[in-house]
Image (cartoon, rainbow over all chains, first blue to last red; front, side, top):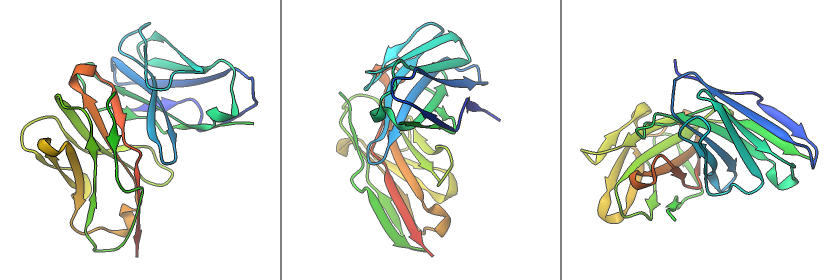
Length: 112
Length: 114
């Protein structure tokens, strides 16, 4: 059974803290994605990666960075968390040939 | 930039009613199209996908969708809904020219009354 796991289901942080969200997939997928999900806005792409150490900006990269040191792991970093980054964060992975993305369960981040 | 529009934000209907959710996208090139569902408290699951071939695609749980290229649309349908179809539904589009970037619509919350 394919699996995308995210390190935390719920996270509460304070404004200004550095936050790490981790995502691991066990399907040997080349592509990995980070989205945030907000009511009425659907899912918006923050960053994606098609290979180790490669990254591409999505539609809303401001305030975020990413790291992909190993194929199976894709980390999202909030350098200095702000209240407007309170959201549900979803990780996904897919094959390089544009296969169907599989999603993790999400991390609900609250920034106080 | 590509955009995906889902016209209905909220839909409320009774069991056994028919459901149709609209999805339109702005890109004119070759696209792959998806519908995902998110049940309360659960992660996103793929309902169905269209890559090529027959524009009428069938997915899981009795859902189907029709790709109409001339209208840039990929509407989701189910002839008779059940209470368990209460969920949020997302349309997503992948432009082949943009690699594997998947763009989502804003979602439609569907509430099925028993």
